[in-house]
Image 1: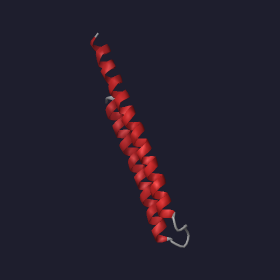
Image 2: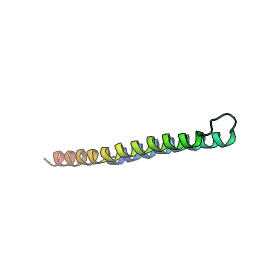
Image 3: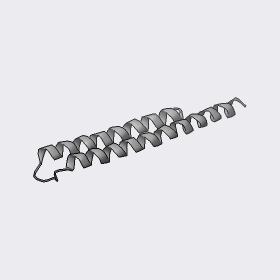
Image 4: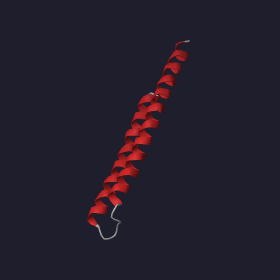
Length: 79
């Protein structure tokens, strides 16, 4: 399996886990309005959105690094 494929698979799994946490917290806030602050939904949305976006940005950069490493490995293999 290439490094690009492994990175993509790991990023999808991590993003899905973060989306699951986001979903859980959003449902928790709706089910228990007396246990959370009034701005709970906004704070959860901003925090999880920033975490997922930041991770996606880092993954985007790492994808190009992995692609470069895959091409270098292919060239070394041809020698």
